[in-house]
Image 1 (tube, one colour):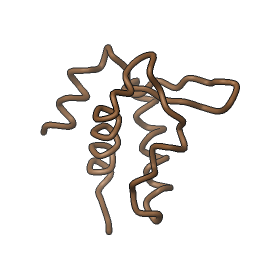
Image 2 (image 1 turned 180 degrees about the vertical axis):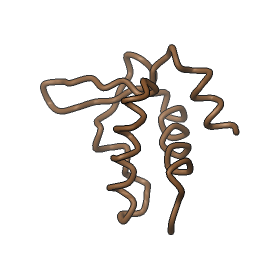
Image 3 (image 1 turned 90 degrees about the horizontal axis):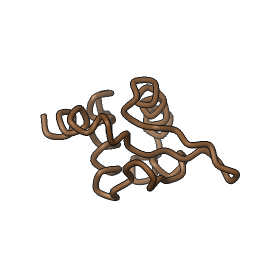
Image 4 (image 1 turned 60 degrees about the vertical axis):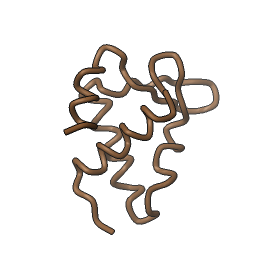
Length: 84
């Protein structure tokens, strides 16, 4: 199965919205690729890093690893990507 980078981004954001990982509610960085085919995990992590650089996803370092959540300030951009 091959997804475009936009398709991967869309699936990442849909998953995070579905689980309501906004702002203060976050999940481990390594949990996001779960549910994707194993051969895409590297691409998913690369897209996560890109989303973080763009400010769509916020990284939160914790004592037990890196966590991520959706940036509430970017809600309209996130909805554009998901519902395009």
